Length: 397
Image (cartoon, rainbow, N blue to C red; front, side, top):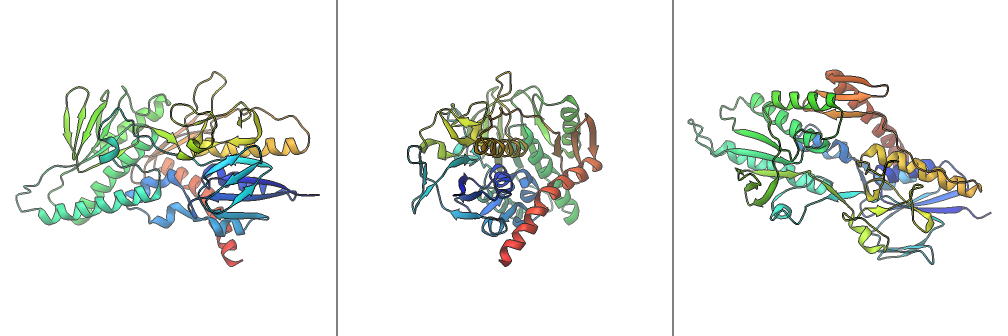
């Protein structure tokens, strides 16, 4: 009997989880396609840009990882299209047939066109190359500033602006502030001068999240010296300066924008229905409508609650979506009815600079401080260490 072939596009959190679950079944072969030869653990990027870890900490080699699984091939290439009539995926080098397709190519930083200059002068951190560019430029500018100091500390302000106070914005602001504090303390530099500004469009950071997380994060940010500006919307970004809708101006050395995400550009070439930010429209099974053998999961899909509300994209959502898509593929192969996707959040952990965090665990348990930091690191280890072990096995094959 011929094995069922599943093609997974995207080696992010959702794609990797799908491969893990599919590889357990002897009647299924898998091809994972990604334009990069590594899995980027973007949820840990705050540690990388704050110089707490090196680049290898947030990357896993995909060719080695795939070799560790049974009947999984990896193709490092860029997908250029999907032909639903012939059930094939096209790349510039070849055409790959599929019985089932899982699209999991993630997202990119959304730079709204109604904010002039944002795309030109702000950094994103949705890719490792963007995070590395920011990190290197930041450290060079920091060195230039130290070299320019005199005994009178007559230097220009060195402001870092984080646009957007959602989960990523808060974590990055906290880690950058902790990094600046640690840097000047370790070097005993007298002219501090680094200030982190978190520009928040709402009346509170982490808008819509649990009050405990909001209060804990806000308290920590203030203690780290972060300037949190609520109810401020960015109206224009110029070179080294932002303008806010209330008339305020603020100069900056660097700006990171985390105010939103859009689906990866792949959706532009598929011909499937999307929303305004390019997310693929899926039904309650996570299928592309009218295509029961094609699933879209994670940041690239518009996942909705029972009430029709958009579910914020997280690594947890991508992983649960992957598991659900695989389960429905298996149900289809066994002639069983597919099940609708219902997402239940298993908790939230937030890194808040240094060895500090806050979180909600299953059962409503609230934690903050060093304990929360340890729990978050443990969760990351439980995710990344098995992948590193598998990658090491695959490397030897």
